Image (cartoon, rainbow, N blue to C red; front, top):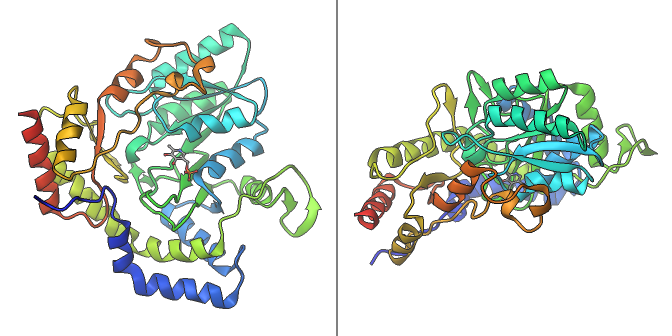
Length: 376
Ligand SMILES: Cc1ncc(COP(=O)(O)O)c(C=O)c1O
């Protein structure tokens, strides 16, 4: 019997990076600038260079990274925010918390991301109904693969809607010759510990090329204060800051990130090669590179495969067991079972296999053999 495997092995990554992380954290403890210390600005510059954007505003979480740009746009009561039904609750919760309404849209069965044709239909239906004012689209890069920003961006330009990329799962991914962060007018990512680039606590960032908007995001993250005069309050804001210790940790992890991304790409390629043909996977899009936060497969025998792997000490996870319109908190915003069939079918079939930057290929082979045995 093999020892149980971790689903994501953050301890192995810490052992690899320990000298640098410990030294940088100690430096913060010694200089004592725990909020907006020099490491925050240093990290923001490094993140901008990595993504190829002009501005990075680090924030307290991925949820704040979604909320602050929506606050800056003044999104609120009477507004419709279009987003995929197959996502994490944070995408939908933010417009609701601002008093706006989410309009759930189905996803493309190949990419699992927002279906541009379904989006155009949902906007037209909302306009025809006349109850809500279409204001924004949140495109989610589910499981690390960038959404179709050309088609979605074109729709947003035509319809006059704000496009926010929810890149909580896709930091480091690319589409065409551009990295996530540079694919939409504003992009939100998360540094939750299990994310591809994870802190040792909560964290997030907003990326944009618009310097004026970035100034507003900086103001909102610090209680709406004037960026040069902390006690001049210009707008309603929040406490949305990333703390300096997390910035120091992320600065070390960002240096290791290109090699980690390459390793996770190699792990994914091995899964692609060794898994039985009976399990479906989201399409590998030419010209796009995933950040591989997770490796997700699809099978109608999902629950049996999960149980068989569990018996062999191989952990798996289900992201997500229900589409948003099936969740009690959002049911009143949806149209019920059968209304978003692709999202509904995927939630019954998807299974995430172990994936992390320290996963070795021999272990991937063992997992693939266990999946094949479960399906035999
Ligand atoms: C798609 C998506 N959006 C938003 C978030 C929110 O990020 P955070 O947990 O950092 O607030 C997450 C992560 O959990 C996510 O997966």
